[in-house]
Length: 79
Image (cartoon, rainbow, N blue to C red; front, side):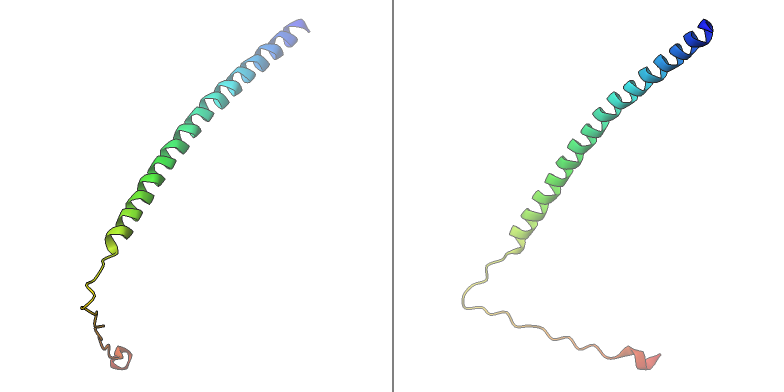
């Protein structure tokens, strides 16, 4: 009876130790991944903001943009 109780206690202690080790090591990895993701997201948002600022071109007052009209024929009738 005492041998079974001792084996049960050893197995339980081992499982508790491995569960603690798994959860402790897993939380550190998740935190590191979330920091890396936040850093990448900040870089992408900065690039988008730079692109939007670059895209805003101020045209001279005397020059007006003339829209180009491109006609596209209906190609569905040609099969």
